[in-house]
Length: 456
Image 1: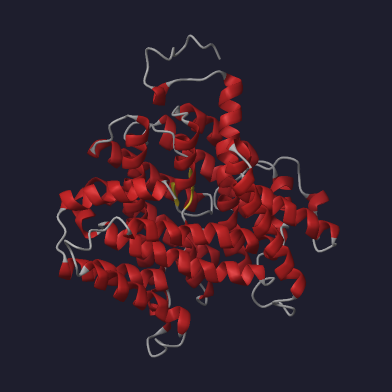
Image 2 (image 1 turned 60 degrees about the vertical axis):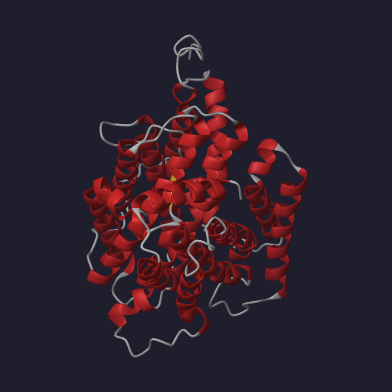
């Protein structure tokens, strides 16, 4: 691509088109930074549903393919969709715990999850223009509490991974713990001593090191990879037509609202980082893209999508603000989504390997929430301490006492059995009762919280 198409002195850095080799290299870097998290969700949900390895590979392919489509919509922009900033889209961690609860519900399965995802995407498209009116209910004290609890809940998944996987006969065997410890040690060493690109892909390096060790130990089974085609077209509804259940649909709509608040903060932070003003119309286009990406995810039998914070942090680290770099990343994900053998290899990663990385990934989610809570003005709003304490306390109930709400019917299990949902509901209600945050205050706090989160 000619450098004269968009000379740097005549366009904003966000719109600057770099030479093709740079676009490809920097785009690949963005993909590598988000890859581990992107494939973690299919691995978690597929594992919970005990999907065979070939179906797990299909799920990973579909997820990467939908990630690519959602990223292109968000970065290129199509009419009222897309904020047109350097953003990589991926599966939101907020949805993992609710989807695990849905997976455990009799009769729901993958098709029930996809029905809830589809409803959430349509719900998001409907409410995106009105998000500014409910922003006041989600100041930093609320979003910080919710994100902290997300990390705490997900850490349970990481612990089970590190022990070999829940339900395994040799759960907690020394070999599993040693491999998980090795992965964690490699990640920490890379973060400590590496610089630039290598530091940004520390998680992937750690997983690769652990994977190589387990292959050498004979723990990895590649049976069936020869039968996988070199290229497979990702088709809609390959796992079945979405089915709709009331509680899962309502739960996923609540997840969508949390995603909206998180995404709004990221949009504002990215606008400040790149020097491009982000107004209400920009936010609406970005949220519409999140919602449309979620609808596309349901159609291709994958999951809800949101702007990835680690990639926004990468934009700040590299100082490369061109959205076309992320467009290149979206194209790369589309290509990866069409290669089943690669997805099969990823699906074969032992859970103890993911466990070492899980401590970092999920711990960072909790750390982000704590960092956001540090921006709260507790002197001016002294009851915010109660909001944090009680909402996190409610969220811990299903973790420390899983049978606490056993008197409630099974249909309510996704709500009362999910610490994230309990924290979300209690934080919103308590903040509304104690603080009565205005829209202007919430917007200012969201911006400060987003800036704090990006400097984790």
